[in-house]
Length: 516
Image (cartoon, rainbow, N blue to C red):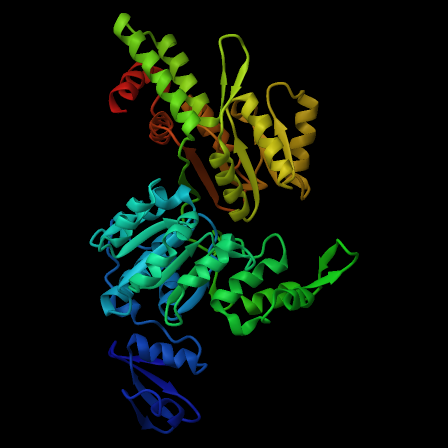
């Protein structure tokens, strides 16, 4: 295949009429040679005819707007998506697939193929990932986050003339009829698409309800069918319905062997079958992306529960009273800010030494989402001991294999746990107090680090990250910050900017009171 003057594609084929009969802007120019206008529709038709490696004209037509220059793998991903009305993007977490999708969608909007795009994603990344990346990559587009506790307000947000509408999965049930009636969403993007792996759920049925036959649908996940080959069925039913049987039971028989009434195991060829049904698809791992930084930082927003919000405000009011009565010392500021952090992450140590637990199901669910999307092991840093045990208990109840390290674990036991984490398949997750592993320990079996809550020391933060990002690490690393309160957001920002938090405690204390 040859690109002629950046305007046309010259192809050598056995049967030129197979192309000229379906593409008006094409012509036979020699023995078995066809010249085809290099446009998006023509390129898509050539792909549908089985001609491989047909390039998308996005490579010649698009200016790639935004604050940052796209990486090579992001260009390739965006190019791939523009060629398929329904497709999968299985790029690993931390490879910047959100930006790839935004550029591809923006290109289709410029050509008039897409009027509006609906983005369905977890609540935790609606603003921190999608809204932020849209501002950075396509700031000329109107964007709205259609999320509000009031259903009427959500409908009003949906009805705004925004080209990109971002919504969490659970909001879809409220707005499905409105989306169908609107009829202007030509592109639907599903991020962390494993949320739709089961076609028997109300969530999947509601999603299917909003789909039109002519919709563009792109489904994103870094870990397709990670828990079982069966999980591929719900995804394939959306993108490649002809590739799977009509009923899930028939697909289960294709990929699983029944051992007992309650036990099924994957068939030897299950992986190959899953690969076949989850097409068309593109995948880049972080190791494939040679131009990607060795460490990528990601933020996940986790709104506080009503209970947390109530006690957070009570603590802030107490801080205001203290500030009104006397000069604030660094010690006093540290104590009060620590209480705010404890409320934010789910458990407060009262003056009586008792522990007061708060509802933090939202944060726990986001942690599970991150683990499910991670291609390797996961390290979870939690500064407070009670949180460590609560996290481990909840993860174990959800069938994750987990070990814990805190100050009470003996040196010999720590060595055993670290060795098992590094050299055996289990545990998949290690929940650890940052101070207990901030020096001298190698944990590069993990390539994802999650901060349940920020630490108060830049040195501890950098040293904790270095447990994973060190000599011998074969994978690129993603650092994920979970945040739900203003004090968490401020401290994470200070940590990334390497600001000495202990020297800024009083200023942080006063800023927290002024900005809320």
